[in-house]
Length: 79
Image 1 (cartoon, rainbow, N blue to C red):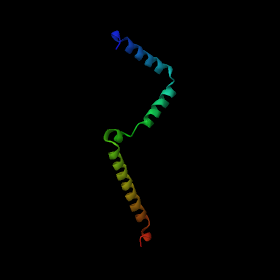
Image 2 (image 1 turned 60 degrees about the vertical axis):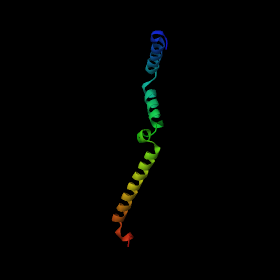
Image 3 (image 1 turned 60 degrees about the horizontal axis):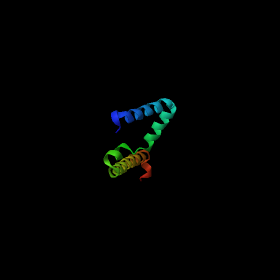
Image 4 (image 1 turned 90 degrees about the vertical axis):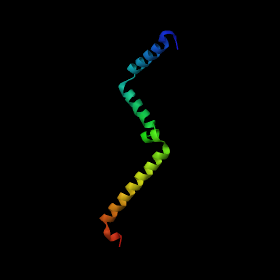
């Protein structure tokens, strides 16, 4: 590290100037793009195996609900 933190102050000042000079729409677009590239929250915290298991469980639950709704709507199809 530089003496008395001069490098750090220059770095922070550069970042602030760059932030101020960037238009607000550009900053919003950059944040939105960065969020879309991130892994899902559960995958980041618990890993992909858990996330895959959870997605499979959710898909089964949706499929079972859809199947029950279709059977209730059309009882003549089962006989």
